Amino acid sequence: MTNNKNKIKNGGHRKPSNNISNTNIDNLHNINININNKGNFINIGTHNVRGFNLETKQAEFFEEYTNLNLDIIGFTETKLTEKQSGYTQTNNKKYKSWWTGYPDKTRTGGVELAIKRGLNKHVANVIKKMGRLISLDLYFKGGAKTRIINLYVNCNEQEKNERNKLIDELKILIREAEHKNLNLIVMGDLNADAEKFDNMYKINTKGKYKIIETLRNKGLYDTQAISNIGELEPTWKKNEITSRRIDYIWVSENIVQELIITKVHTNEMLRTDHNLLIMTMETKKIYGNKSRADERRKKITRTIYNYKEMNEEKWKNFREKLNNNTDLLRFNREYRIDDKNQKWTNRV
Image 1 (spheres, rainbow, N blue to C red):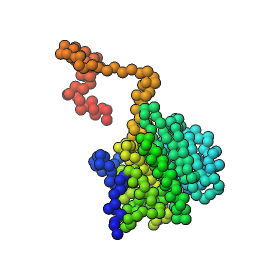
Image 2 (cartoon, one colour):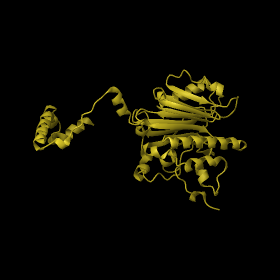
Image 3 (cartoon, rainbow, N blue to C red):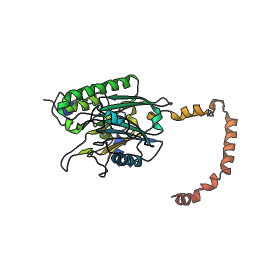
Image 4 (cartoon, one colour):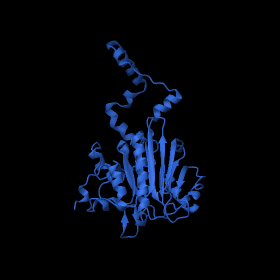
């Protein structure tokens, strides 16, 4: 038999992409990200809520997400039917949400994507499959396009045919995203522990671990695995003995460089046995060149200097004018060498 560790894993294994700085990866566990920092970062979470029928529970969870400044949240195991999904959180003033579930009453299934108001106007396409998968595309005027897929994979082996069909639907959406050159984020409760899978001694992957191999073969990256060092924190806890990492956020190669960190957030007051998983990314490739798009819309112009037309006399005039302006701004007095240390001390 062949050790499964020796098989090639294109994206999701602990090894980051070759073009990611090893120094940056090694230092990520020391980073204390302020996820309330707006503008430069986007915060995306996935959470198995283990039932979302009660309005009081919905309010508690959304209050937590608001306090954490989450921009996008993927819910799994809502246990809401398709009909119930139609009137869930319709009056939420901070998040716009899309839901799906099984047609009939059930004790499982149900997924959702919620997006912060304002950001929701960029949603271009919503796809729902089998009451366990929901996908939406974000389009920005700057040119960036991102597909976000949230899914809840069947755990029961008696539902293996439905699970395989769900994975096939996922593959179709991933292939379509690749064809359209979309950024890709896949998240949710996969009901499969990647570390346990890596310790298995099997050549062929069947059953619940097929989803892990599928995502890796598609070249996606397990963001918690590549942005943390040492033993990874579990996302699900059954008791003091049994816990697993079964909730994930995966990203495509074209945005993995934007990843800051993915961490587990614990709040024992929330009524679920799963912890919230939060990924923080830079927004450049998610939002695209939004500033240039805004400039065109607002008809803002730029001054571009033609340095080729400069000569010695023009540079001399430029230096003189620059010196005069700095004198007016008190730069020389502000940063005199003899009192420089005192100036900086006053600013600390």
